[in-house]
Every structure is written in C-alpha cells, then in structure tokens.
Amino acid sequence: MSSIYINNVSFAYKNSDKLILKDINLEVESGEFVCILGQSGCGKSTLLRLLAGLEGATTGEMLIDTKKIVSASLDRGVVFQDYGLFPWMSAGANIMLALTQSFPDKNKKELKEIAYKFMELVGLDKSVYKKLPKELSGGMKQRCAIAQAFSINPPILLMDEPFGALDAVTRAKLQDLLLELWSQEEQKKTVFFVTHDVDEAILLGNRIIVLGQSPSNIIYDCKIKEEDRISRENQFDNIDALKLRNTLIQQINKDVVIRIEKFTE
Ligand SMILES: Nc1ncnc2c1ncn2[C@@H]1O[C@H](COP(=O)(O)OP(=O)(O)O)[C@@H](O)[C@H]1O
Ligand SMILES: [Mg+2]
Image (cartoon, rainbow, N blue to C red; front, side, top):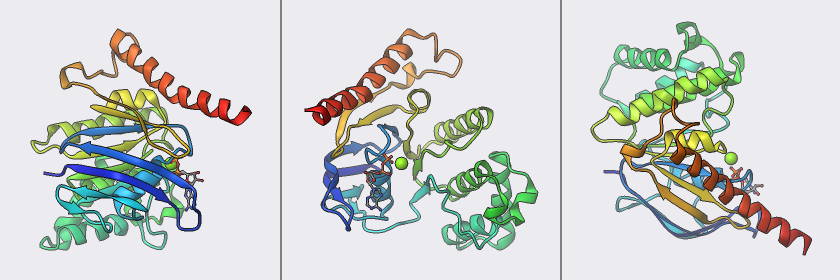
C-alpha cells in the first residue's frame, strides 16, 4: 500500500520568509491518479519537491502510509521539469544507476534488458543509450527520465509536467502509455501528476486538484469514477467532460480574478 497523507503542511524556502504553501491537508488513497492544476508559480513543483523529500515542510508533516517523508527514496519515482539526468553520464548509465539501486539482486545483463525495454516503450532508439544528455533534444531527455522512473517500478510516481517539452503525437503516446502502465497493474501506482493543461488532467486523473496561490492551498478537489473516465476520443464532445473542463478553468481563473482585485485595491 502507498497512501499519502499531507497534514497541515506549510512551506517557505529557507532564503525567504514568504509562505509558498499554507495549511495543505490532503489524503491520497493508494492507487489514486492525482492531477494537480494551478497557475504558474502557485507552488505545484514545490509541493512535489516536498513529496519527493527534496525539501522539508516548514510546519506540518507528510506521510507515506505511516512513515514520515524525510528524504528521497526508491519508493518514489520522480520525473521533474528539468529531467533529472546526471549530465556527465550517458542516458543509459543514468537509467542503469537507478536500476542498480532498485534491483541489487539482478545482474548487469538483466538490468540492461530492462533499460532497453523501457527506452523502447517510450520510443527511444537503442543508439540513445550511449549518448550524453547534452547530445539529446529536450523531448528525448524527458523520455529518458520517464523511462528511468517507470523502469524502477516504484509504488509512487511523482511527475512534474513530464510531457511539457514533447510534440503533440509523442505526448499523446506517452499519456496513453502512462495510463496503460497505471491501469494494468493489480496494485495500482499512486501517481501525482502536475500539469498546467486542463485537458491533460481530465484525460489522465481520477482525481483533480486545483491549487490557488499566495500562499497556495487547495481550492478545488474532485474525484472521477472509473466508469466516468473520459477518453481521448470523446474528450471534446462528452458533455460531462466539457462541464468539468469549464469548472476547472473557472476555478483556476477565479483565483486570478481575486488576485487582480487585491492587486488593484
Ligand atoms: N529555490 C527557491 N527559492 C525561493 N523561492 C522559490 C524557489 N523555487 C521556487 N520558488 C518560488 O516559489 C513559488 C512557487 O514556485 P513553483 O513551485 O516552482 O511553482 P509552479 O511549479 O506552480 O509554477 C514561486 O513564487 C517561486 O518563485
Ligand atoms: Mg512548476
């Protein structure tokens, strides 16, 4: 099981006393696919960094089941906006490093097979294995990071706008792959997926959360039943999908309107 509990979490970066997150309370059941929406700068990445254990909460606590999050751990695969690959290691070596840590009992040949399998799944050619991150395009680096996170098969996936730098077709393919990997497993992964794209959130999430800002907290939270899941085919003509889309856009914009009013007062 891998439920996540965020209890009264507030957060300010160490070099500043401005609260970025304020009084966040959230309970995520094991296997939920949570999409986080919100304006740029509202604290989505910050929240994910806390869940990854890269930052500690200023007040409050975060738990996975009963264990407090205190540092990064192999039970959480991360795909961040800046790809997270070590620049001095080849793409393949980056993936192998994560695999070696996750599967200490497997030999190098077995691990290499896993690495190639996931590189192929995300649409990367074998020749990419030996290339350094600086020799790859943004989209390719992003796919490497995704292959790395998927290959270690963690119970929790933390993804920060992972498909942002991709062209529309690759993006759609990887969205489908992510959903497939998530839904086919008996013990579903708990996924935290940050996006600023309302349509992507509707397509992927079975729970969608909107963060407001200054300081950020949860201003909207809805669950989508599995039987009501919206497919790529009916996303733009299903009335429920369109209603949800409108609600989410209103929620995101409501926060902007309030902030503009405060700004002009
Ligand atoms: N390392 C940092 N030090 C200080 N402030 C930061 C740091 N990283 C981000 N911030 C600030 O925290 C706020 C939230 O940023 P971020 O979490 O990146 O937002 P989002 O991902 O929603 O765009 C922004 O105001 C940003 O300027
Ligand atoms: Mg961000």
